[in-house]
Image (cartoon, rainbow, N blue to C red; front, side, top):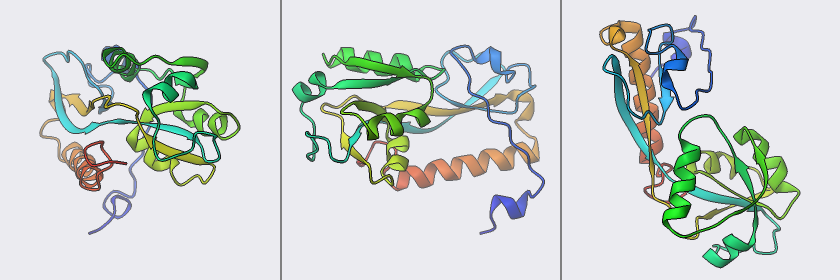
Length: 197
């Protein structure tokens, strides 16, 4: 199968994080081609397609004193945590999941991007609770250890949304198909929280 580089060698992508209000992205006006993430209460002119469900896992340093195969709820609550404050709904989802399961975190530091987490975790005894896709990527870093969350924190949807005017656009349809196939590959590999890390 040809790669996207072969099929669309002139494609240019601009990736921009979006906050709680999807209208800020320009996708509703049609100025932005697509949004990916958790899309809550979309307007009528936004087509939303579910890609997969994502779960959560924990990251600690590889030589952490608690570096076993799992964390108990008690250990989790005793640890100090790196809190990620990304734009969007994932932040609220994690707080709600922890509250629903009766878990508390002692937040030591908050960062605004997931990429800040590995360096903080690698040199401290802190813990971070992150989406499994990100944990899968971080598992390549030998300084880090990925553990399941101490309790089932549930899953959250990852969705793709676009303005209805692009529904039949051939290039847009091609790109949506590429994203859907990638999401299916990730889901089949068990990375999306259904089949482990």
